[in-house]
Length: 199
Image (cartoon, rainbow, N blue to C red):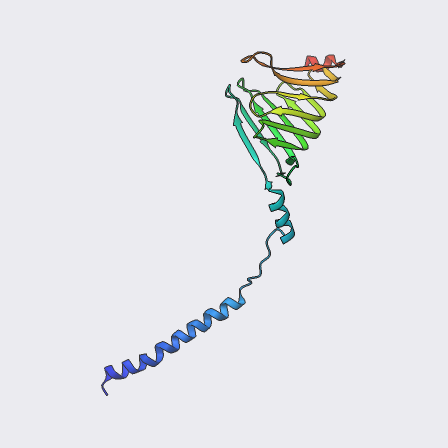
């Protein structure tokens, strides 16, 4: 038998052995890999999120007819079951006016309804304007389609000229393309502080 024939016979034995060794190695390595990895949510939590249609960090962005920017975001939102109102937690809203000023709104909870063009802020609501006015209340209804909002209940506030309270507050434009104004009504009380006005 010549040298070539001996080499052919040798490889006929060697190659199947190498193939078996490689297959065995693959199976041994696959056993050492952890395949039972748990995710960040339990099965019950996943089922509840699917049934309630939960969304994490929802972020709504829009533009009014006049070109003002509207943004509302939350930590968590859920559609809820049939017949329930959608709910959101830790809501933050922002109106960017055309004059460069801004109105911000934050609350513990509420609803974001793009289908109705509204956002509602509920619980420890804080409204802040670029003019230095800060108002706190329990409920604020706002629009996603224009710069508009109102509080059906009592408000406490502070501003450049002092502290104040009122039965209601609303903001928006009096005319279609007019500037945005804030109105306080139903028993407004102001504690005037001259030192604030002088700053």
